[in-house]
Each structure stands twice: as C-alpha cells, then as structure tokens.
Image 1 (cartoon, rainbow, N blue to C red):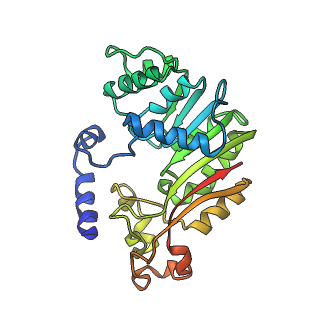
Image 2 (cartoon, rainbow, N blue to C red):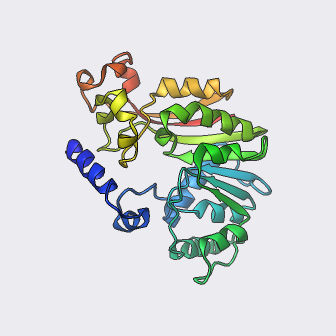
Length: 278
C-alpha cells in the first residue's frame, strides 16, 4: 500500500495544478493549524511545555512551518504577543471563515482579538495582529535580526526540513533567539507513507533527490540521536520532555537501507518526541 501511495503522490505532484486545489481536496496538506481547536491546542501545549502561561504579553513568537494557516498570528495577538511565521513556501489558506471562527472562539474566552471580517484578506489579518509572514525558509530566517525572538515553536515540522539545511536552520534559530528565549518542538520521526519507517528503505541518493523531495512525502530521515546532536552543535541546551516508541519495529530492519543499519533497534523504535531548547 505504501508503495502505491508513493506512486500516486509522484504522479499527482506533477500535474499542472496549484497547491490551493490540492488543499481543497485534502491532499498534500501542511498540518492542521487551519482548525481552530487544533491550533489552540497546539499553541497552548507548547506554551505550557516551556512554562510561559500568562507571560506572553509583549513577547515575540516565531512559528516555524505554519503550513496552511496564520492562526498563530491571531492566537499570539490575543495573548498580547507579536508573531513571525516562517515557512518554505506560501501555503496559507485564503478562506477567512477559519480565522473568523478562531477569533470568535478567543473572544468567547474573554481574550481581546482584532475584528476580522469577510471583506478582509489574510494580509489585513497580519497587519491587525502585528505579525509577519515569510515564505523563503532558511533565507527568511537569515533576514530576522539577532536576539529578537522570545519563543520559537514548531509542530511536526523539523522532520520536513531539507537534510542539508537542517543544522544551518538550527543555528539560525539560535541566532535570532534572545539569550533568555526558549524553543519547543514536537518532532514526528514516522514516515509519511503510512506511519511506519518505510522511508528508510530508500537509498540516500534517491530519497534526497529533488524528484523525491518535491513529491509530497519528504522527511529528512534524521534519527533521534542525530537530531539531538545537531541541536547541541547549534549551541542549544537540550531537554527531551517526552519520547514515544513503537512496541516493535513497524518496518523490518533488514529491509532498510544500509545507512540505517548502524542504529540500534532501541533508537529506531522512537516514533516521535518533544524537545525544549534553550
């Protein structure tokens, strides 16, 4: 089944249609932050993880990989903060009903939110919430001033960064973070072909080729210990707050590419983890 999914995604990704069409059809989605409940749950979970509840007034928050939504800009504004959203492309959903609903939910919780009307567009929302939206990945991060961000978070994003850019992005996050700043990241190490480790069966040359990367199922395949070491190389202090594991390997180790044979089974069993960087 996962091989069929690979084939289908390769074919669909080559069709001459824009991302907005795939978004409407529920294909190639970049997260679920366009759901009000989900966006609030994710935002609050990261804030709680780093102990910033009730302390966001006047802060600058950066979300890495907002995906289909600028919901974070509205939530951060309601909490008294400014936000910077950085992604590798312009994937934002233009339907304002999502943002109107989110603003209403926050207002019902007695938060002060800017008025969002159907006549506005997403740029108006960014202005109203004192937010910025960048769509050029590493290049965008490099444009942000040093020591200017209080809090950085991402939800199932780090595994999608290009492998060759990963350490540089980590270093940029460290550069823009204030000395007193903190980061929270949720990392999903499963493949995006069915929630296993079938992505580890491909050779490095094939998997990291532009052809595969642009086919809608890319993850960088960086394993847990490697990622932790890269955080440390980026001059972060690392605090792993949660680790999730499979009971047994979902993909036979013998079928994996030889590059991954060096990892212990215990390491390969790690399916996701939460990390705080300071």
